[in-house]
Length: 544
Image (cartoon, rainbow, N blue to C red; front, top):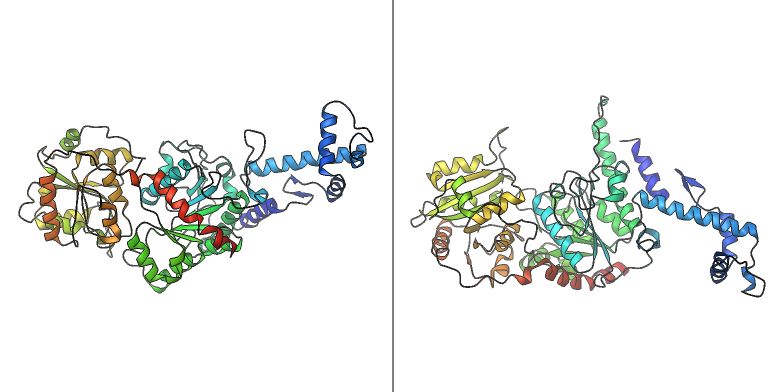
C-alpha cells in the first residue's frame, strides 16, 4: 500500500495537468506547437480544414490571410491535435474523465465542464456516494438514483466493493461503481466501465498478498489509506465534473470528515442525506457529535426525511436550518412480486391460515421495540396473532456469543414470556425475493420505534399495502396521515401495542373497498420536488 500512494496521486494529478511532455505514457502537445497553433485564428483553422478535406488547397485572398500557414506548422498542429485527442482518450479509458459520446464528442466532465448546470434542467450529473453497502442505505441509494434518472438527471453511484445490492440483477438506468474502500488506481477497469447494469461485472478480484507483514505495517497501511483515499476519490469526482456529489452516510473513510472538507476546498457542491440526525443508540460521545456537526457544516445542502427530522436537526445544528430540504422516503420498486402463494409461505412457517400475521423486519435494535411486541402478545385478545421476527440483532451493549443464532436474544425472551408458540423466527439477511414472499404472507407490519428519523421498513409496509402499527417517532405520522390502514400509538408501551394488534386483527378480516393512494410517495415525484428545493440552495452556497 505505501508504495502505491505516490503512484495514485501522480496518476490522478497528472491527469489534471493540461500540459507537459510525458506523464506515465500520457503525451501532451509541446509548448512550441501550442504557440504555433495560437498564431492561427480559429476561423482560419476551420476554413483550412474545410478546404483541405475537400481535396483543394487554400489560395491567398480566398480566405483570411492568417490561414496561409506553412506545411510544417500545419503538420505540427495535426500531429499535436491527434496527440491531444489520444491523450484525452487515454484519460477516459482510465476512468478519469467522461468517455466519447455517440456523436463522437465527449461528455461534460473534468476540466472541460465550464459551469454548473441547473439541477432541474434535465442535463445535470450527480454522483451518489454510499459507503455502507447494506440493504437499508443501499436500497435508498438505488431508488434515489432511479428517481433522479426519471427526472432527466445522469447518475453514477459509488459504493463499497462489498456492497450486496449491486450483485443483484435489477433494472438500472444509473451506473454503479463498486470501488470504495480500496485505492482507485487498482480498480481502473471498474472505475472506467462501472458495472454496466450487470451484477458482478467489472469487479476487481484483489489477490491477497502472500508476503508476511512487518510489525506495525497494518497501522501504517490504515493511516495511508485514511490520508490517500479521500483525496483520490475527491479528485476523480472533480475530474468527472459532476454538478453535485450526494453523500449518504457521515462516515466514508475512517472516522473523519476530510472528504467533505476536500470537496468544499475544490468547490464541489455536496448534498448530504441526514438519515439519522444523531445515532439511535450509543456512540453519542463528543467525537461523534463533532463529526456530525462538521459534515452538516461543510455540506452545501442537507436532506432529511420528515419535518420532525428537520426540527431535530435545527435543534442540534441551528446553523444548518437554512440549507435543509425535506425529502420523504418513497415506495420501493426493487422488490419483485411474491414468487409463492401466501398460503405456501404460511404452511412452511407452520402458521394456520386463519391467524393474523404481524411481522418485525430487518435489524433488531434496542430502539425498535421488538421486545415490547413480544410482551404485547401476552395481553388478552392477542391470542390469534402470530409474530414473525426476521433479520438479525444489532446495537445491543452485550456482545453475542461467537457463532450464535442472529436472533438468540429474541428467542430467549419469547421463551421467558411464554409466547414462543406465537412467534416464528427467520434469522439472517433476507434476499429481495424472500422479503416479498414474507410480506405477502403477512397482514401487519409493526414499527413501534422509540426513536426514528425515517423508516425504510415503514415504506416497505406501504409498498405492500400492509396494515401498520407505529409510533409517531421520526415523523411517521406524516407518512400515515392519509394512509387508511394504520394505527398510530403514543409510544411503544406493550398495552398500547396490544390494543393496536387487536384493532389490526379485526381490520384485516374485513375486505378492503379501496386501495390506498401512495402516488405522492413515488420516487419520481419525490425526487422532482427535492430537485426543486435543492436548486434554490446549491447555486447560492456554491458561489459563496
